[in-house]
Image (cartoon, rainbow, N blue to C red; front, side):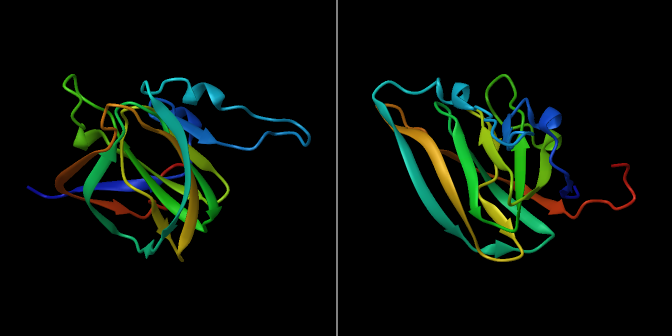
Length: 166
């Protein structure tokens, strides 16, 4: 069986919507765009956690052998110093397992953040071009474990197809 290849696509709020939100600035100066509703669902006894991370760069194509999800809270990534990064998400089947053949991958500029909905399977922070930093916000604590890591059969994120319609 050949490995799955998933081409990176441009950011697309509609395609990403089943998995969460793209964090985009408002269209007009002086305006605000709110994402607070994504933080409403959280485990009892949890508290907001805000941290920064330092991510070493990957090069395309990217071999993926592990994904993660947070079953009880959304996870928000805000690029603090990132050139470009890869986002990979998967829908889940009725048992909550990732549907690997239906993954979507996005090539994100360092000017757009992402919020993964509660329970969404996704690739961990993966930057391209140079080392990067994200600010990450999510709920932590409480009685329920909220990190679910899964090893998957290898799949590959590949550069966007220049001949594909944009």
